[in-house]
Amino acid sequence: MNAFVDFVVRLLGDALQMPLLLGEVALRDPLSTIIVATGSVFIGVAVGVFGYALLGALGIPLPHPGSGPGEQIE
Image 1: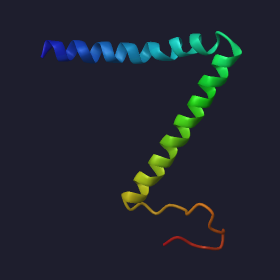
Image 2: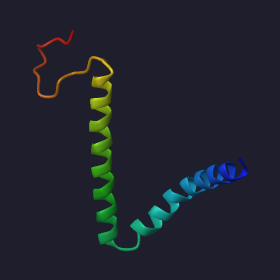
Image 3: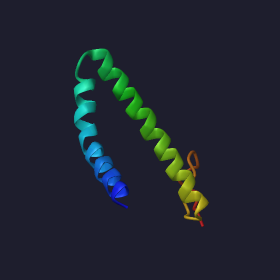
């Protein structure tokens, strides 16, 4: 049990340090900044699409992308 607690504490500590380390890497040179920004956008879009699909699978009514404003979702 003690090993599990140590693992969780280390995991949370590393998760808190990650944004600082990512910022250091992103600000080293312009190419790194572009690569980090592109990766962030890619991950953000993927998470958004997955979230949209998950909510639809749970039966939550969502607007259909590309449908006109006159159509009402029931």
